[in-house]
Length: 123
Image (cartoon, rainbow, N blue to C red):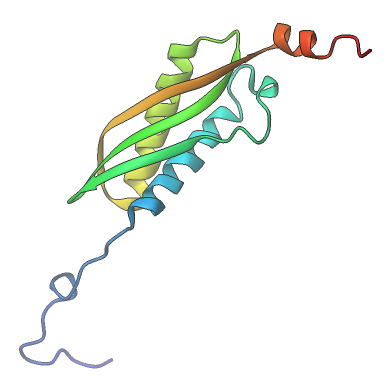
């Protein structure tokens, strides 16, 4: 192994890692999808209705906004709380950023009754 050169900076002081905002948003959307795959009513949500995330990063803090679709009936507050906790944990673990805020917006609810109505008679 090579010995340290006198005057060489320690590894932690030599540079920085910057994670692009879009990468943090993709991590958040993927994490939300992990939770929603097992959520009540997940079978009612179309496969192409993937969660979308936007992020605002300042220094080492990421504020997230998630847009998702849920099956209904379900305890919407509980599902959103589970999504918030999981996304916060995954983003913090994978990026090292603090996540003080995860805003969840439910864009659409999919119900079995609406699906049956849409599968009605074809004339």
